[in-house]
Length: 347
Image (cartoon, rainbow, N blue to C red):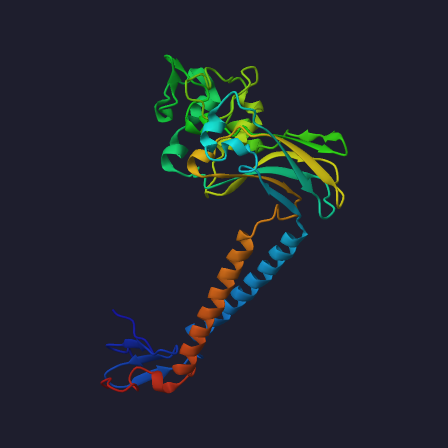
């Protein structure tokens, strides 16, 4: 026997929702309307507030980056043209390829403000596309880690073997190793340059084998760049490790070493350069950079410019949302937005 309930059953109940959070229940005999407080804020207002906040934070971060940048000191010296003798200025490629022509060059750098140690030494290359697909793929990571135990060097062509013997390390990246050298003299004394720990520790420990030694390297007829010490494992040859971490942009800097003593204002530094590396055949540029560092690293404009771009875009879009909100306002909790009160809606 069915149980009787004290409340009559509502038949054919249907629900409809308005735009402001109001709920309506409709039945054939009557309409029940429940009004709940509108908790919705205009989407335009929410996005406008969020974008203004994001823009303000971006400009603050930009100011922080720029203030840190101004504390860094740099000395930048382009030497590729000046290190060519006058007699060879019309044919620089012939000079750099001539093994019998002396490549020594002397430059004098002036310290304008006091530079506190450590002072980082970089070489900078411009118009050098390390990000070219063929160049980036021309390496064998397994060979770098395991040496001659790994025989598949097909990705390294054309620098995979020479005279029938494999090349370690193989590939165009290693073959084109940067090989200019620098020595520094201050007050008739040579400045010591610390060239240890210039590569990432993760690269030294996990990408270059501790028992892998150079083999048959730079023994071909066409020499691309610097050689390697056959008695040192690849994990200890940090020049190679730094070079093998390819750059994403055509202008880049790579760490050469560190000077671990202060340089005073008006000091004169004599730099003896051996100008070996050929950038003349493709119109590249070579620069020597001495730089101090801050908590954000070296001097770099990219991060500050990125924050300016994000902040400016956010502020601009926030004004767009503000104009939309002013042009098409929507009062909260307005009963005119209930579905059956809107024009054109049938009862």
